[in-house]
Structures are given as C-alpha cells and as structure tokens.
Length: 75
Image (cartoon, rainbow, N blue to C red; front, side, top):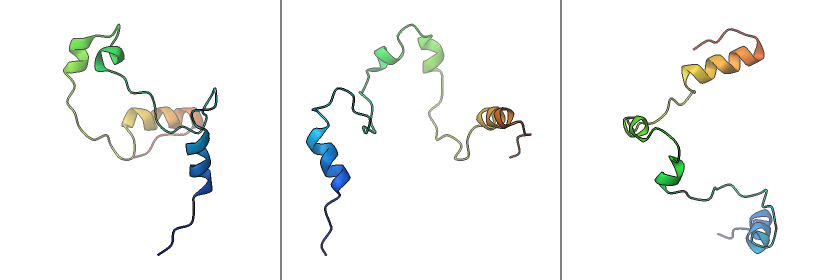
C-alpha cells in the first residue's frame, strides 16, 4: 500500500522552528506541576480525584453555553 505525502504536515515539519509565531502547533509547552500551581491553593488541587470528564460536557458548561445562546439547558 502506498500512502501519499501529507503536504501540510510536511510543510509544518520543515518550517515550525523557523517562524516567530507558530499558529499551526497543536500542542503546548509542557509545564511542571509546581509551575501550573504557582500562586494557587495546592492542598485544594491535590484533594481532587482523577477521573474522566463527562463526554458531553459538565452540567455547568452546558448551562453556561445555554445561557450564552439564550435557551434553557437540557441534558
């Protein structure tokens, strides 16, 4: 099987380090946890349980989107 060259990806690979602002980057610079928590309540952060988020968004997010569009939220 022959896979054609993905030109956009190839162009990004060639020039991603040559530009001042890379608007095509999909990742972010990694942070250490201490950088992420700088100035925050560390104990409060550390008390949160790790879990998968709701796939259709949190109830708060749905409510805020509904308010923005002027409709009642439904779940």
